[in-house]
Length: 211
Image (cartoon, rainbow, N blue to C red; front, side, top):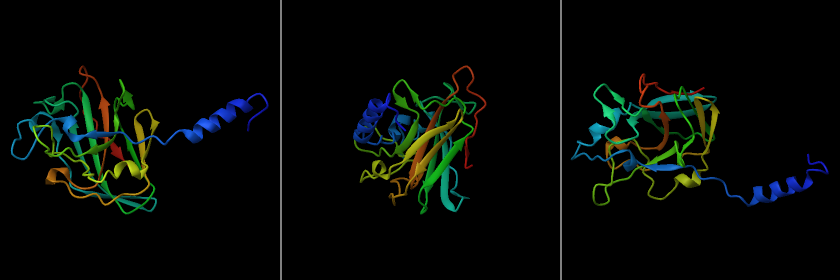
């Protein structure tokens, strides 16, 4: 409640709060993670670290989702022969399908996570960047086919719940089309990037999903 000393501050907050639009969830194009196509797997070898998992069903508090995962190096060509990313920068993909609403997706065990680095968001939705001329495409990883730009209308929210934990809340899941290639999968694809640093890129932690 506003006191006589803070009423003007409260009024200003109310006015600006009503006029500011809701922040859109950040997105990232799959081509930003490296190039690759079914006919040329040369570049894929440089960033694909842990291939996509089979879909698994998760349930909690009456909510049901089906999820696949993948781990890649955020920088193309960064995958090392020992099975890790040389810069210590890891990108985790979580592709989800569900008919439930208002679903919280809790991701924990994140080593070296900060929401933003030099103006670049380290979380959001991965959008498929399919072949459209030249070599600026990547259809060899989990991503969301979004030809009708539905992602920004969902109203996805994000918050960091602890130092190594985050939560995405999904109001509803549109029926996204399947990817052009099987590697893209089908569904809403969330990503989280962590930075362990090049001096300590190992061990590779595997984020938890759920409570």
